[in-house]
Image 1 (cartoon, rainbow, N blue to C red):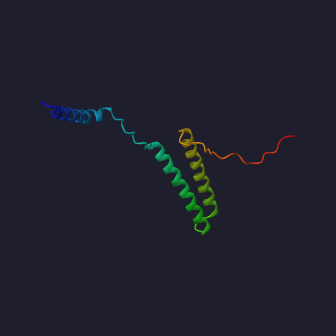
Image 2: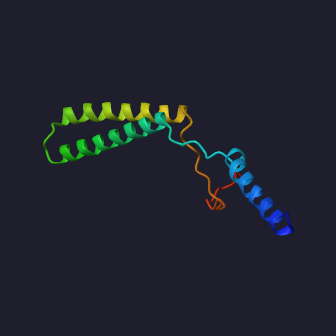
Image 3: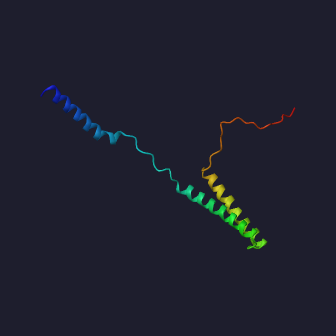
Length: 110
């Protein structure tokens, strides 16, 4: 076996070894970040906001009486508050942070 054959055999062996070993040692892809509970809560929040907007529109056009409007809107707002509490309790909200300095003008007690 001459040197060229040996180099070719080693290169072929190395290529085959990489081909076989790479799938085992490569990093696994991240799992899907889909969270069913978050999706359902966010969908509920959107449905409630849409229902409030629709109710307000119907009331503004005179299609809904004032007493029905007030009771239905109160019910929708209560459902919205409960949904937001569930979203907060589940930890699906993140505090808003910015890199900008606070430019609000605070008066001192002096």
